[in-house]
Length: 280
Image (tube, rainbow, N blue to C red):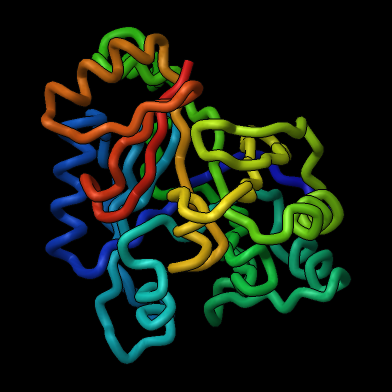
Protein backbone atom coordinates (compact mmCIF):
# COMPACT_ATOMS: atom_id res chain seq x y z
CA UNK A 1 0.00 0.00 0.00
CA UNK A 2 1.20 3.51 -0.79
CA UNK A 3 1.51 5.53 2.43
CA UNK A 4 2.31 9.24 2.33
CA UNK A 5 3.95 10.81 5.38
CA UNK A 6 3.51 14.50 4.52
CA UNK A 7 3.49 17.14 1.81
CA UNK A 8 7.04 18.23 0.88
CA UNK A 9 6.57 20.99 -1.68
CA UNK A 10 4.55 22.55 -4.50
CA UNK A 11 6.12 23.90 -7.70
CA UNK A 12 5.49 27.11 -9.62
CA UNK A 13 7.09 27.06 -13.09
CA UNK A 14 8.41 30.24 -14.67
CA UNK A 15 9.45 30.65 -18.30
CA UNK A 16 13.07 31.58 -17.54
CA UNK A 17 15.42 32.65 -14.77
CA UNK A 18 14.66 36.40 -14.97
CA UNK A 19 10.99 35.58 -14.34
CA UNK A 20 11.99 33.23 -11.55
CA UNK A 21 13.90 36.01 -9.81
CA UNK A 22 10.93 38.34 -10.22
CA UNK A 23 8.69 35.70 -8.67
CA UNK A 24 11.10 35.33 -5.77
CA UNK A 25 10.90 39.07 -5.12
CA UNK A 26 7.11 38.95 -5.25
CA UNK A 27 6.96 36.10 -2.74
CA UNK A 28 9.33 37.96 -0.45
CA UNK A 29 7.49 41.29 -0.64
CA UNK A 30 3.92 39.96 -0.42
CA UNK A 31 4.23 36.71 1.56
CA UNK A 32 7.52 37.30 3.42
CA UNK A 33 8.71 34.03 1.92
CA UNK A 34 11.81 32.50 3.47
CA UNK A 35 14.34 31.12 0.96
CA UNK A 36 16.54 28.35 2.31
CA UNK A 37 18.24 26.67 -0.65
CA UNK A 38 19.13 27.62 -4.22
CA UNK A 39 19.33 24.39 -6.21
CA UNK A 40 21.80 24.12 -9.08
CA UNK A 41 21.33 21.96 -12.18
CA UNK A 42 22.74 18.45 -12.32
CA UNK A 43 22.50 15.89 -15.15
CA UNK A 44 18.91 14.73 -15.41
CA UNK A 45 17.66 17.76 -13.45
CA UNK A 46 18.21 20.63 -15.87
CA UNK A 47 16.42 23.39 -13.99
CA UNK A 48 17.09 26.24 -11.60
CA UNK A 49 14.91 26.36 -8.52
CA UNK A 50 14.70 28.04 -5.15
CA UNK A 51 13.39 26.21 -2.09
CA UNK A 52 11.12 28.66 -0.31
CA UNK A 53 8.82 28.59 2.70
CA UNK A 54 5.55 30.42 3.28
CA UNK A 55 4.60 29.34 6.75
CA UNK A 56 4.97 25.58 6.86
CA UNK A 57 4.36 25.21 3.11
CA UNK A 58 7.33 24.80 0.81
CA UNK A 59 6.95 26.42 -2.59
CA UNK A 60 9.53 26.09 -5.36
CA UNK A 61 9.79 28.73 -8.13
CA UNK A 62 11.41 26.74 -10.95
CA UNK A 63 12.68 27.58 -14.44
CA UNK A 64 14.18 25.44 -17.24
CA UNK A 65 17.75 26.15 -18.31
CA UNK A 66 18.58 23.71 -21.12
CA UNK A 67 16.18 23.97 -24.05
CA UNK A 68 17.34 20.62 -25.41
CA UNK A 69 16.68 18.59 -22.26
CA UNK A 70 13.60 16.45 -21.71
CA UNK A 71 12.91 18.23 -18.43
CA UNK A 72 13.03 21.70 -20.03
CA UNK A 73 10.57 20.66 -22.72
CA UNK A 74 8.19 19.32 -20.10
CA UNK A 75 8.53 22.41 -17.92
CA UNK A 76 7.55 24.55 -20.91
CA UNK A 77 4.12 22.95 -20.75
CA UNK A 78 3.61 24.46 -17.30
CA UNK A 79 5.43 27.80 -17.51
CA UNK A 80 3.19 30.48 -16.08
CA UNK A 81 1.45 28.24 -13.56
CA UNK A 82 1.71 25.46 -11.04
CA UNK A 83 3.08 22.06 -11.96
CA UNK A 84 3.91 19.35 -9.46
CA UNK A 85 3.34 18.10 -5.93
CA UNK A 86 6.00 16.30 -3.90
CA UNK A 87 5.07 13.86 -1.15
CA UNK A 88 7.30 12.30 1.50
CA UNK A 89 7.45 8.50 1.75
CA UNK A 90 9.62 6.15 3.78
CA UNK A 91 11.12 4.44 0.72
CA UNK A 92 10.72 4.78 -3.05
CA UNK A 93 11.09 1.19 -4.25
CA UNK A 94 7.80 0.06 -2.62
CA UNK A 95 6.18 3.10 -4.26
CA UNK A 96 7.52 2.03 -7.66
CA UNK A 97 6.14 -1.47 -7.13
CA UNK A 98 2.76 -0.13 -5.97
CA UNK A 99 2.39 2.24 -8.91
CA UNK A 100 3.37 -0.43 -11.42
CA UNK A 101 0.83 -2.83 -9.90
CA UNK A 102 -1.82 -0.20 -10.64
CA UNK A 103 -0.78 0.18 -14.27
CA UNK A 104 1.42 3.29 -13.96
CA UNK A 105 4.90 3.70 -15.41
CA UNK A 106 6.91 5.72 -12.85
CA UNK A 107 10.18 7.36 -13.87
CA UNK A 108 13.32 8.56 -12.11
CA UNK A 109 16.65 10.12 -12.94
CA UNK A 110 19.46 7.56 -13.35
CA UNK A 111 21.02 6.84 -9.98
CA UNK A 112 18.21 8.52 -8.04
CA UNK A 113 15.73 5.63 -7.80
CA UNK A 114 16.22 5.41 -4.02
CA UNK A 115 15.83 9.18 -3.64
CA UNK A 116 12.71 10.12 -5.64
CA UNK A 117 10.34 8.71 -8.21
CA UNK A 118 7.94 10.62 -10.46
CA UNK A 119 4.61 9.77 -12.00
CA UNK A 120 3.96 10.49 -15.65
CA UNK A 121 1.52 13.38 -15.59
CA UNK A 122 -0.88 11.80 -18.09
CA UNK A 123 -1.20 8.84 -15.74
CA UNK A 124 -1.89 10.91 -12.60
CA UNK A 125 -4.61 13.44 -13.46
CA UNK A 126 -2.12 15.57 -15.42
CA UNK A 127 -0.06 16.39 -12.33
CA UNK A 128 3.51 15.06 -12.08
CA UNK A 129 3.75 13.70 -8.53
CA UNK A 130 7.10 13.19 -6.86
CA UNK A 131 7.47 10.63 -4.10
CA UNK A 132 10.63 11.43 -2.19
CA UNK A 133 12.39 9.43 0.54
CA UNK A 134 14.84 12.12 1.69
CA UNK A 135 14.53 15.51 3.33
CA UNK A 136 15.11 18.71 1.40
CA UNK A 137 18.61 20.24 1.81
CA UNK A 138 18.86 22.76 4.63
CA UNK A 139 15.10 22.46 5.31
CA UNK A 140 14.41 25.05 7.99
CA UNK A 141 11.33 23.16 9.15
CA UNK A 142 13.59 20.45 10.61
CA UNK A 143 15.24 22.85 13.05
CA UNK A 144 13.92 22.65 16.60
CA UNK A 145 13.68 26.40 16.98
CA UNK A 146 11.80 27.00 13.70
CA UNK A 147 8.08 27.83 13.79
CA UNK A 148 5.50 28.93 11.19
CA UNK A 149 3.56 30.95 13.78
CA UNK A 150 5.12 34.28 12.73
CA UNK A 151 3.19 34.20 9.43
CA UNK A 152 -0.04 33.75 11.37
CA UNK A 153 0.55 36.04 14.33
CA UNK A 154 2.74 38.86 12.97
CA UNK A 155 2.61 39.14 9.17
CA UNK A 156 -0.39 41.16 7.85
CA UNK A 157 -1.62 38.27 5.69
CA UNK A 158 -2.15 36.19 8.82
CA UNK A 159 -1.52 32.86 7.07
CA UNK A 160 -2.55 30.09 9.44
CA UNK A 161 -1.64 27.33 7.01
CA UNK A 162 -2.33 25.63 3.71
CA UNK A 163 -6.06 24.99 3.46
CA UNK A 164 -5.94 22.94 0.28
CA UNK A 165 -4.59 22.54 -3.22
CA UNK A 166 -7.12 22.87 -6.04
CA UNK A 167 -6.95 20.68 -9.14
CA UNK A 168 -9.05 21.07 -12.27
CA UNK A 169 -10.58 17.85 -13.59
CA UNK A 170 -12.86 17.03 -16.47
CA UNK A 171 -14.10 13.72 -15.06
CA UNK A 172 -14.77 14.04 -11.34
CA UNK A 173 -15.64 10.38 -10.78
CA UNK A 174 -12.51 9.14 -12.54
CA UNK A 175 -10.26 11.54 -10.59
CA UNK A 176 -11.80 10.52 -7.28
CA UNK A 177 -11.36 6.85 -8.17
CA UNK A 178 -7.70 7.41 -9.06
CA UNK A 179 -6.78 9.21 -5.85
CA UNK A 180 -8.66 6.81 -3.61
CA UNK A 181 -7.62 3.56 -5.27
CA UNK A 182 -4.10 4.34 -6.52
CA UNK A 183 -2.81 6.94 -4.04
CA UNK A 184 -4.90 5.60 -1.12
CA UNK A 185 -6.16 9.08 -0.27
CA UNK A 186 -9.23 9.24 1.97
CA UNK A 187 -12.48 10.94 1.00
CA UNK A 188 -13.08 14.08 3.05
CA UNK A 189 -16.24 15.44 1.48
CA UNK A 190 -18.27 16.48 -1.53
CA UNK A 191 -20.06 19.67 -2.37
CA UNK A 192 -19.65 22.85 -4.35
CA UNK A 193 -17.47 25.94 -4.26
CA UNK A 194 -19.57 28.84 -5.46
CA UNK A 195 -16.51 31.10 -5.80
CA UNK A 196 -15.39 28.80 -8.64
CA UNK A 197 -18.89 27.73 -9.72
CA UNK A 198 -17.63 24.19 -9.39
CA UNK A 199 -18.49 20.79 -8.03
CA UNK A 200 -15.84 19.55 -5.64
CA UNK A 201 -14.64 16.32 -4.12
CA UNK A 202 -12.02 16.69 -1.40
CA UNK A 203 -9.56 13.89 -0.73
CA UNK A 204 -6.75 13.82 1.79
CA UNK A 205 -3.31 12.25 1.88
CA UNK A 206 -1.49 12.89 5.19
CA UNK A 207 -1.51 16.70 5.62
CA UNK A 208 -2.56 17.50 2.03
CA UNK A 209 -6.19 18.35 1.30
CA UNK A 210 -6.71 18.02 -2.44
CA UNK A 211 -9.76 19.62 -4.06
CA UNK A 212 -10.92 17.96 -7.27
CA UNK A 213 -12.81 20.72 -9.08
CA UNK A 214 -15.13 20.33 -12.06
CA UNK A 215 -16.74 23.46 -13.55
CA UNK A 216 -20.52 23.56 -13.66
CA UNK A 217 -20.62 25.83 -16.71
CA UNK A 218 -18.37 27.32 -19.36
CA UNK A 219 -16.88 30.78 -19.18
CA UNK A 220 -15.61 30.62 -15.59
CA UNK A 221 -11.87 30.85 -14.83
CA UNK A 222 -11.89 27.17 -13.91
CA UNK A 223 -13.64 26.19 -17.15
CA UNK A 224 -11.28 28.38 -19.17
CA UNK A 225 -8.31 26.79 -17.43
CA UNK A 226 -9.53 23.37 -18.53
CA UNK A 227 -10.37 24.48 -22.06
CA UNK A 228 -7.32 26.61 -22.87
CA UNK A 229 -4.65 24.84 -20.88
CA UNK A 230 -5.16 21.39 -19.41
CA UNK A 231 -6.55 19.57 -16.40
CA UNK A 232 -4.20 19.70 -13.43
CA UNK A 233 -2.81 21.86 -10.63
CA UNK A 234 -5.08 24.91 -10.48
CA UNK A 235 -4.73 26.81 -7.18
CA UNK A 236 -3.09 27.07 -3.78
CA UNK A 237 -5.63 27.95 -1.11
CA UNK A 238 -4.44 29.63 2.08
CA UNK A 239 -6.27 29.71 5.40
CA UNK A 240 -5.93 33.13 7.03
CA UNK A 241 -6.92 34.51 10.43
CA UNK A 242 -8.93 37.35 8.89
CA UNK A 243 -9.86 37.60 5.25
CA UNK A 244 -10.58 41.32 5.62
CA UNK A 245 -7.11 41.96 7.03
CA UNK A 246 -5.48 39.85 4.32
CA UNK A 247 -7.42 41.70 1.63
CA UNK A 248 -6.33 45.03 3.06
CA UNK A 249 -2.68 43.95 2.92
CA UNK A 250 -2.94 42.69 -0.66
CA UNK A 251 -4.65 45.89 -1.78
CA UNK A 252 -1.93 47.95 -0.11
CA UNK A 253 0.49 46.20 -2.50
CA UNK A 254 -1.56 47.40 -5.47
CA UNK A 255 -2.78 43.89 -6.33
CA UNK A 256 -6.04 43.10 -8.12
CA UNK A 257 -8.37 40.76 -6.26
CA UNK A 258 -11.42 38.72 -7.22
CA UNK A 259 -13.93 38.49 -4.38
CA UNK A 260 -16.15 35.46 -3.84
CA UNK A 261 -18.49 34.30 -1.07
CA UNK A 262 -16.01 31.79 0.38
CA UNK A 263 -12.68 33.03 -0.96
CA UNK A 264 -10.72 36.01 -2.18
CA UNK A 265 -8.56 35.22 -5.22
CA UNK A 266 -5.38 37.02 -6.14
CA UNK A 267 -5.43 37.90 -9.84
CA UNK A 268 -3.13 35.26 -11.42
CA UNK A 269 -1.68 37.93 -13.68
CA UNK A 270 0.06 39.42 -10.64
CA UNK A 271 2.45 36.52 -10.27
CA UNK A 272 3.01 34.76 -13.61
CA UNK A 273 -0.18 32.72 -13.67
CA UNK A 274 -0.17 31.43 -10.08
CA UNK A 275 -3.69 31.36 -8.59
CA UNK A 276 -3.81 31.97 -4.85
CA UNK A 277 -6.96 32.14 -2.76
CA UNK A 278 -7.52 33.24 0.83
CA UNK A 279 -10.28 32.11 3.16
CA UNK A 280 -11.01 31.81 6.85
